[in-house]
Each structure stands twice: as structure tokens, then as C-alpha cells.
Image 1 (cartoon, rainbow, N blue to C red):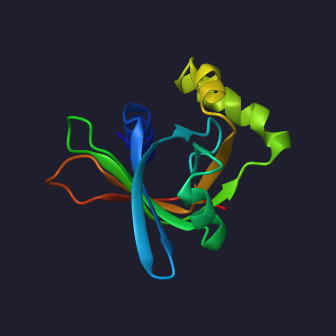
Image 2 (cartoon, one colour):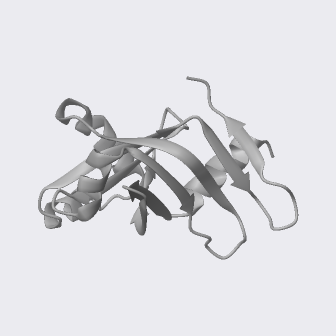
Length: 143
């Protein structure tokens, strides 16, 4: 299996990531669910309520890192230098379609969440660990 195939398989099999922010030298990690973009492999989406501390952290420093959370098998995706930005209102319909493909109850959950924001995480390099013995595979995404 190629590195991009392993990457896609792992992203689609693991529903959560540990997302790290850092503001004024203070790191903060939390677990969030994510949704891969259907057409851009180097873009993931998350949703969050506007009153969550991470929203203020994103505004202060849009650089983030993340790792998918291991689910049974020792395999994960890790990205050290990504950018996060709020998805503009005119883009949300396409993003919601991405979320619905992975989670058919997405709109129902969105309604219960109050006023959620959608965020896109974009990166140019990812590390793929498919097992604990082999070295991680690096994937470079073209701009």
C-alpha cells in the first residue's frame, strides 16, 4: 500500500485527533473529532462552539499540531506544523457535505451544539506511522 493510501485509510478509520495549540508559550491539547476533505487530502475540518477557549487560541495563534488517536492498531497520522482558519459562511455548505459523508447525524449534532463554527486545518506535510516497527512515512502535499 502506498503512503497516501495508508494515510487515507488511517484518517478514515480513526474518528478523533489530539489537537494542540500554543499561545504565548503555553501549549494546550484537546481531543476533537475531525472530517477529512473529500477532494484535498491535506485539509481536515473540525467543529467547535464559538465560546470554547480554543477559538480564542486559534485567533491568537493559528499554528496548530495534531495526531490522530490510536484505535486498536498502533497506527496514526501526525502533523507538526498546520494552519487553522475559520470556514467562511459561503463555504459551509460544501464542508457540511463532507461532514455528512462521514457522520449522517452531523446536522442533528450541529443543531444541538448551539452556534458551532467550522474550521479548516491545512498542512503541507504529514507523518504516517502504520506500525511500531517501521519508520514513519512522510507525505509532502503540493501547494
